[in-house]
Image 1 (cartoon, rainbow, N blue to C red):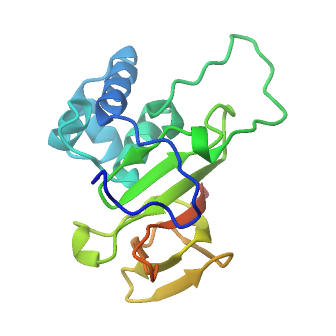
Image 2 (cartoon, helix red, strand yellow):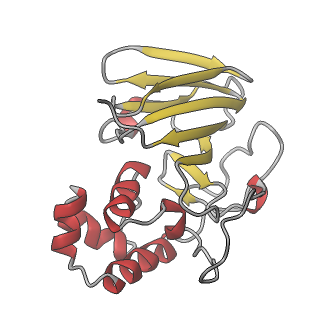
Length: 210
């Protein structure tokens, strides 16, 4: 993303997104540790083999959807692709994990910067994520984003339009929320009047439709 992009509307500044080479290296290390080939991982997660190769070699930034699909196929939390989770063998599961947005490791797709939160809580059933939305037009995306489960979003700053592949859309502002089926294709767009990125906190679950 451009280094001169407008600062966030809230005035707080999260860490710059980590270099995608780190994400690619972690993805490759986890895959090799499980003794999987790129072809085998591709067959498991549904992401094209060529795309997975480019992800590992840091030749492309990809959406949350593709990273999450790869992580799910490897049986790891997506947060492990951003920051290795250190939990001593036999350690008891923590009662609570606290973290700050400003210290979270993030990833840039060119349309969003997103920062998984509380990644060191083991066996999570939800994925909370802080995101800065810079995209303002649907033409900035190759396709809608889809992933299993449900999604809850609350706007922290600015205004966001969530556009669905059904043709429906919602526009939500500061302290307003949306809850939807994330298997339906969707895109977040900033509608902030001042040109700044919008900021949202999103919580995703992997509860599948029956």
